[in-house]
Length: 630
Image (cartoon, rainbow, N blue to C red; front, side):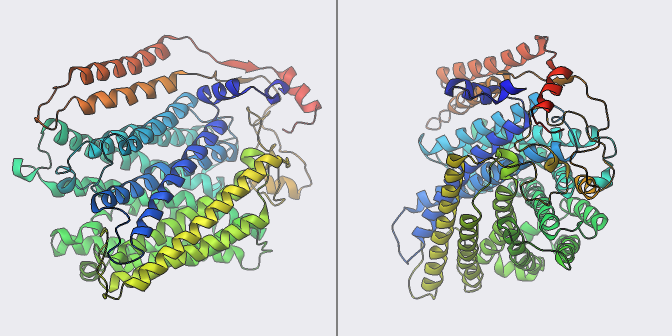
């Protein structure tokens, strides 16, 4: 359809993205929003490291420091890492399974707008009386005592954003189960699709308790419900259980898709099938299963008792086994392969030792007696960042370089990419490796300053310098992106030349209908099979025919906007000075208006007779004659 390739005006371009239900454009939206929140979280991290560069620093106050560390963790986990992974899932998974879109395009769009409006609502707290200040976990014992509306921004914003994430998880589950191309059995699915499948399952079961915990915390704060307030008969430890039943699977919700990205990269740039594919699949499923059995290792110091501590210690050690299987499989994939050290491959190779270091310190903390000593020290900060940065962020940077040509049709500069890689890797280890020793020397986490002559000055200075090196690496990556966008040099369908899976068989970026004919999958790495047989296109599973497509819709944006408006009304109806519920009639009116927008939009969606549209066979033949690919 050549008309879709015509240049649009700015207004038409924006409207296109505001109303799109195309999974590839939604991937672009997730990518841009996630990148912006990543920058915001990075700036907050820089402020933390500037404050801790020297003893008795007064760069920020103690109260502001609490807000910064809370927003840094919350932003990076919920608003940067998760949506950036959703960007790759949206861009790649439907292509990898030979589908024309996700199962529910409308809900896919709604999920994004809920995430975005929830994230915006949370960050508006900076300008509307103060950000949340009880840590990214927002433990009830701290958050119930927090003055102002900062924690309310946290609880309500994350609920709105979490609804979007939950919808996306359900959507990917249904898509992968029901929309695979003929021949694409479960044991022929690429590893990235498998990890998306397991992570989506974890989202469904983990984000539900998070929503419940935030809901109860909201009622405690705004209506005095006393679920967690000990003075009112509540139990604050229950909140910790609810949070970590979400919080530990959340680590695997982030890390498993990262494993999937690295699996694709190792296989592609070793020019080999992934070693031990079946064991990798079972290891992925086992990690997902064990992920729900280890949450209380975050709570060894809360007094659960020796039996509970022992059970969770053993489960924590056991989860290292399937992860170890994956590490050896990646190494054996490279062994004897024709390895090409592109920028994505450099990130992938660096990931192995970096993530293993995070895993080793995790197993150390599985021993409850040692955890008593390390808990709430900088050792925990170092461990967590070796897992998340050494695993997830390296995967996001690798995936950005690897999948950029498929998403946008251009190629990031390899030289700048390698400069960015080396700076980021050096800065990362400089920042966090030394924090292990700070923790062993007794430096607590979450302290806004420290006294001189405790032996912490040099280590903190080195850590802060490393953070600046990482920041320079990210700036170079941004420059790389800008140069690539300005040059706009188009690439072919398989720019790395060694693509093995279905997404590399179609144009870059893909046409809005993905595949003219649903492909027939004849084995693992189906595109590699076709290439080895000398074919230039995929074997079709159906004759060329009309393609049904969904219409764009502005309704998802309006549903999310309504909840965004209602959130302000829900929060401000409570007068914190007088402790009076429903004290603000204006806020109640705003709440009603917001819900009216949401439910009115939902009613409009329910009553509108929208059957989508068809791309006719003749248009596809014309497009094929002009050089399009199947």
